[in-house]
Length: 86
Image: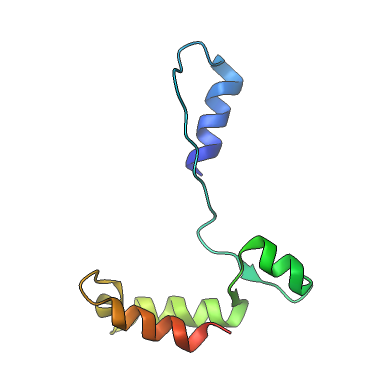
C-alpha cells in the first residue's frame, strides 16, 4: 500500500519536490487460486494455495506463533514454511 500512496502523491503534486524515489512494494500475501495457470502462479510469486495460506496464518497466530515470528529462531519459521511449500 505504501507505493500506491507515493504514486498518488506524484499524481496530485508532481515530482518537483522529489529528488529521488525508490519504490519497493509487494502484496502481503499472494495465494495461488485455482483459476491461475501454473505459470501465472509462479509469475505472481504465489507460494501457497488458499488453504495453505490460511493454515500458515493460523499457525502464526496460534500458541507457537511467537516462536515462529522470533528472529532468533529462524529454524522454527523454516519448519513451518517447509510444511506448506510445495
